[in-house]
Length: 153
Image 1 (cartoon, one colour):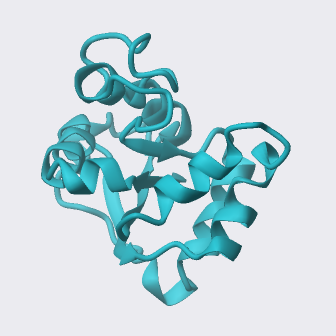
Image 2: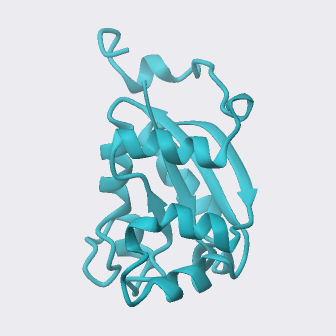
């Protein structure tokens, strides 16, 4: 099974969308195997978003991500990275398709509700950044026979 990271961003925390976001991933059939509240520091924001450090909007990202704590989640499932990215929608909420998390809840490129790992490799790095190994729980949910065909898992 593939794992991926989702960060429920400060805008979603302020708007009290945590349960709605988690419910969407659960209803899809993804398995939550790690979750906690986390307060970003300047150092961790700089590390997590290092690929955007030279962009003119980087300070805006840093400021936005430290307004409140965030919720970091580790989700598991077949093709979890691709599925979560698809459910999240494109980065700019105004361009995200209705039915996606960003399409339904975001009007902004910055305040776009969630961060989702973009590759399996980055998901591993990001999960390791926010979770200790003992904070990721390995167990088979009872609903797996109703989420996947028996030859898929």
